[in-house]
Image (cartoon, rainbow, N blue to C red):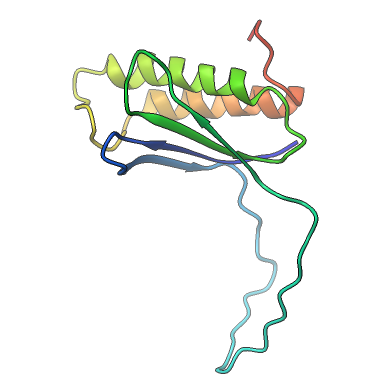
Length: 126
């Protein structure tokens, strides 16, 4: 299963953190000329957007873009909140509502996403 991206949005609606977990690699760079000949097709696969808001921090929203078959998104959102609380809020150099620039937050978020993807879910015991 795939978790595409994680976003953290503050009370005012500003993006304070973005992590693209899965970025497809372009094999060949293509150039286009105007006008573009585009054909849009409807595909059955969709991206699931999960919103999470924890009681401890009103207004902060954690958003995960994931494959619809990915299970355990609610538990993953709880883990992301835990990582945010432990490594961003407890950082004396971090100010609320400001962009998150903390290496420990990045490392722990990446490890939580790896665990969630490998397991196909994010169990309560993680």
